[in-house]
Amino acid sequence: MTPRRAGTDERAGLQRPVIWLVVLVVAAAAAGSVVYFADDVRRDVPDSEFVLDFDSETATVTVEHAGGQAITDRTTKNLTLVFDDASAGTTSRVMWVSDVGGPIERGSGYPVETGDSLSVDDPTVDSNGDENVLDADGSVGFAFDSGDRVRVVWTGSRFGGSVRTVTLANATIG
Image (cartoon, rainbow, N blue to C red; front, side):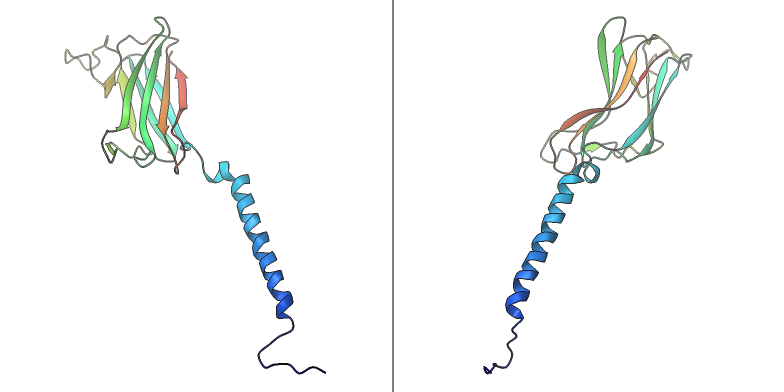
């Protein structure tokens, strides 16, 4: 029988490789799950809902944040309403919120949360009778007609990703 020194264990030679194997398997599983579930865990665009409504009497389009994630300054460069005049083939943009230039690139009007809305009118209707056709939060340079389109367009980068421009909602007027 060979003498054993105090404090040594014959199993230590076997346990060390097993521990490293377990650590390696756990690390590989974590890395694999990040790759596999990346789209679900890290969405590139906000998961927000918008409702678009047209009031033909006042010639006003109202867009309301109807739920989901808030549009925050941290990840958003701008949130824009894009109006397509079907008859003329032109486009008009109304900025809802936008970052300003400079070293910190922060804007005002954030966050856009559930219940927040922006109304846009065309310049042909004075809906409140004050002899000023600009009665809403913003205006476009054409009269709204059936077939015109409006889109809610988000531009930004989430979680350090690349800058993307995505349509979050769209509707046809009329």
